[in-house]
Length: 122
Length: 251
Image (cartoon, rainbow over all chains, first blue to last red; front, top):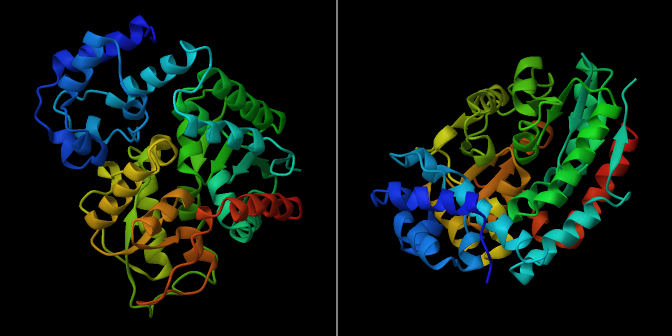
């Protein structure tokens, strides 16, 4: 079981205690509306159980529209990002979803000399 | 002040020729322009690979330092949002720069007889940078196109569906978000200034043009089809990134 950092749990706890379940964040976010639970429920469950399905943590688009419409300006993206970071660091660098390996490969290829170029201007 | 230019990975994967034309044009105003063709590492940041991200990001900052760039002009909103986090380099979006120096003479008013009405998909990483939103509207109007803004635009914009690596982690949800975003827009003829957003808008059922398509490409009329969605092909995307490097070597 992943041991989440105190900073991550604090972010989640703040959301679970502050969110008033107004559902404004769900109105235009496909992720939050399909997910169904309000942020107070989602992060409350996370704090209580110490678990979150990685697919949920990695489904947030981190666009911060929810923060914009939230009456409390809750930063859900920062909480999901912190959970992602813990999922990797607390699991010895192993990625929690196999499809994310594509991102690692993409990054390795991106650094090949075939695709990079730097030229100092005159 | 010494300037640099950074196209970003997705624009390079989309259209090498337009990257080259943009650099050539910028060099008229910034003859000392340096070229930085590197990844900022944002995909690693998004998936939570913080250490690997920092290594990649610092490598980019070192390259910018090596070129003695004081201000880097960035075409990609994702890269720009990452560079904004650094105090080591000053960064500016390409679009306000183009609005300031002006469009190429041949592009000004070229679409004045077009019947096309475009809406804009603003990029979510720069939702708080209103100067970018205003510059994009200004550039479209100077080209001669009519613009109909979405209710959810500017700082209220919605993600195109590709954000946060959702397209990799949960492709079904990402596709639903793309379709939803296109449905929230007042027309299916959509201008983006991010190559990933353009691809997403097409995957969501829209017709989408990158702003550089409209500056450097042919005039678009109602009923015209947008350029092919090359980012859906891994092979073409990497081939284009190689071609962009080759184009930049000779600009």
